[in-house]
Length: 46
Image (cartoon, rainbow, N blue to C red; front, side, top):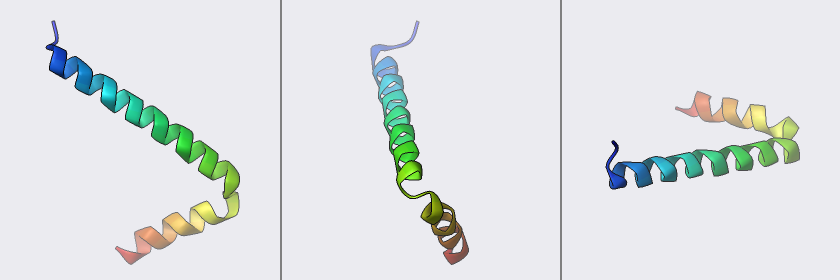
């Protein structure tokens, strides 16, 4: 069986990924034309 600490960490990670996916989907709906150039700019600046 998993340790309680490992279980709580896993739950926290799943919640974080879920909230991020919700935020990204809402962001994509709000800014469909800006999202792709913005990501491309971030990649090019590295």
